[in-house]
Image: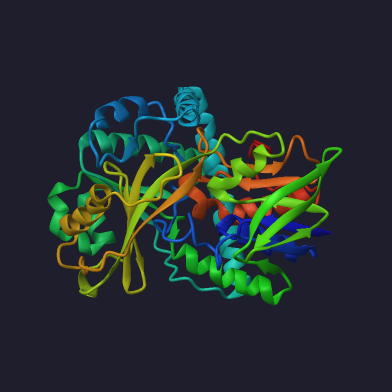
Length: 417
């Protein structure tokens, strides 16, 4: 079967790998000149199985109110807001209800654990390298209230069978010696022992090269124009490339276009509950390797993550709802640099911040949309992964390949949206 995938980010390239592995003919279309150059390009680098709690949780509304008026707030809802953002925000508030949040947490945890297993198997099968570190993710709490929340999350992880352990301040420093300077400020921590870190864009590029060697055809610098369909099936795509137009027909189609997925789906009469949530990062050159962290860190209070990528340090975080704007707000970008200088002064070269902002395709529940379309018999979705695109990539793609082949996925998750 010939399958066309729209999108060459983590979701699209991973899907291409598993579908080609099943023997399908696969073509991938992307508007960028290479793989993973948008939301996957400079994310926080964490495969964070130990963080299944969605942004939409019972404590979120009050926390958001406390952040109002702060330009550097971890979650920023910019005004004025268009109708789509307001509608998404109302759906987000509904998902904060305790029962819904708990259900979403369990679903994300199951898919995350499965995805971690699949990533390890893929790495063994391909020998792929991407500055990966399998030393876990250390969640840091700086207040007693934050620590209590972490202890509650630890109990949830233990019930779900996800590896984690609670640490006091001394144990946090023992796990990551570079934290010695701020030991007195740490209330405690939680180490996600099943977690990893690595360069997502390098992973996607290396995997795309292996896909191409296996026969996958990549169409870069190519936009999707009109989508032809009849009798509940897609019959072809119009490809726009360097001023030319051509038609591409296939047996099945996978939409993995990140934040742009709703635009393409709308042409088919489907509405995807995805909104672009802008995240920021700074990738810094390490100039004092002895004092740089080698365990990936999460500052739970400020929602900032830090990952070691070879001789670089990636600092990422914040969520901003402002449509499809990708401009870098200096206030929010500088907040990341202040964080790293506060925690690791002098470790990185701050004069070369390599600042970046990208759009995460986020659903109100934080659950990705994976599975077959309800309107088009030969259309499938693998999109809406939000802040967990790197964490969920391998498992989502493997499950999608099962669904395409009409096999039950080996993980309990609400596929189909």
